[in-house]
Image (cartoon, rainbow, N blue to C red; front, top):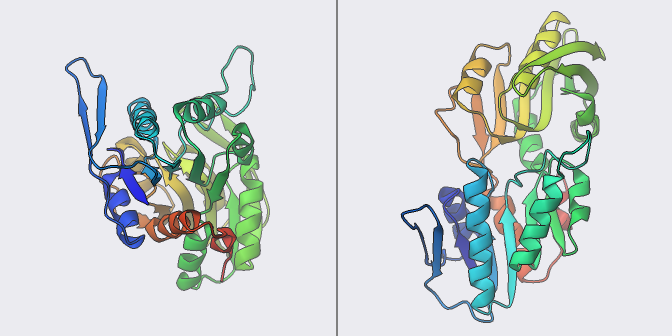
Length: 309
């Protein structure tokens, strides 16, 4: 086994490699004066099982291109198998044509990964489950749920209600409610722009309840904050959020700190873009990803990683 890392999230890659019992492979990544990316894999990877860790988060274009070049370098170095490990799969929001003359970027990225030489994909909490079907190679899709559920159980919250911040999150909220034995509610929203969201109505009773908004990603916190406003008006005792991927910029963190949300739990799938503040609790998924990498290498099942105990 050889574990490689790009520059997107070196810290997470080091944790994953250590927990998998391996040292990160020596890779040199630099830029030409005009910005082109140069990659050289220093160690021999001929006939090896290669795992390349690189979330395609901010800046997505740089990180995606860097990943594709690393995959190409490993393929041309005669690696036996190349697994792209994307803790966060960027460009996943556009997974269908919902209006005329728009791209399906989730499929485009899938095509690029396969064309570069990827033999297998390991990722976590895709924005849409159907993205797995965009690939003609095996996809191992992990969930942050085991990490979140363990943490929420430790908080011992009474009268717990899981809340979907929009109708698209109903399935995710229902899954968490089932695992935690909680109630469920949903917020209807209207998106006015990329950064402006209006919460219009709430379905479900949250009066006197501890509530947790669940979502796969947030970049401005607008959806969460709009939903939190409705929950506060409806008499919720406390409002928390559990978000798999936090793409928050500094404006988003400021909005979160000024909102009724008392805590947002997220993972370290991508590096923080600025100081996250006291309201953000980051849980590590290094153990989860390292276990998956080890199981894939040993040709063992990864199904047990989905079980909540």
